[in-house]
Image 1 (cartoon, rainbow, N blue to C red):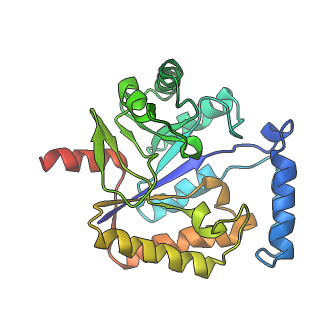
Image 2 (cartoon, one colour; image 1 turned 180 degrees about the vertical axis):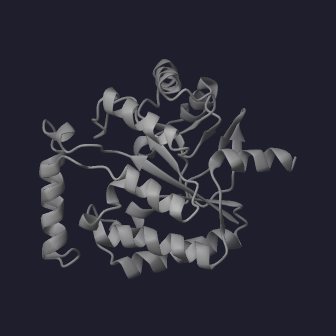
Length: 269
């Protein structure tokens, strides 16, 4: 079994949320986590510092970590707004080009899912910005309906990684579907809307899922970690990612990206 790591970029700045309920909800969430002992006072204050500094992404830091550990991760960025994804197309343009410049795989964090014309518009815009001919997508909040995957395939995406569950790779037309198996949010929040598990608990539950996936014959295990959490203000989350990647390295799992996995699949036909 090989490991595919990806990162959804849901936020870039704090100021993009000044006109929404995102910031008040974030502050309430942080207070709950502080009062329940899930985060330290230092973490709590660092979260306010990040708001003051207007920095709600850790893309560069995560690229540095991944490259140091030979993890060929994929970043998904939005080129449209919706459901709490509010950053401008100018910021998306900046970071998509920066990621591509650094030789890192990049794809679309999709907003449109129930209308082909809107799906295709996102595809064309990302292609224009990135200069890439082949790339994939993950829907924001994993949203989909009965037509979503067909629309994504018809738009031209070479892969999608929205379908959640311990499922094997499959195809929709010419598009490869790599189901999402593990997301840090589900492990750390454990059914709540705030952190309810410790790093140790989340790591153990994740390792159990990794072993379960391997026992079920999953060839490509997909793991999602949001770049927002690769920071000392979310120390438990950051440590989860470090611990899980270090575990995979120590167990001898090979890291691979989506496009390389597609090449492998095609070569085994």
